[in-house]
Length: 150
Image (cartoon, rainbow, N blue to C red; front, side, top):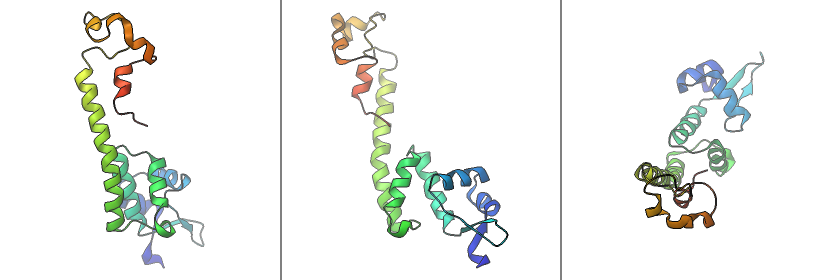
């Protein structure tokens, strides 16, 4: 049984994360460990892949809650297979494309009016003549119309 499991320190080292990260993931229900006779945490080796999936998804901006939900859709909450990863990645790819579009819109509008209704910029009357955007709500309403992020 020992060969199929890793201590928390070994798991952290192999995954390139801190031990506290593994504890956090476990607290959030993303990974599971068991305790040996000495009451030390042990992780099945397939947790390496599960942590890698979590880290990859986080790098592209997927929230831990969405990751948890996605992993929970797998039969018996198993570690993702290559096929599972392809399905998860294609779903997250859509979210990543939306984020990219949002950031491109933000970049393109950053030096111009963002529809905040302040009328303080010299070119605001061009974009928001007579403060018409005030009826659409507070804040940067032009940016808010673009892709909303969680």
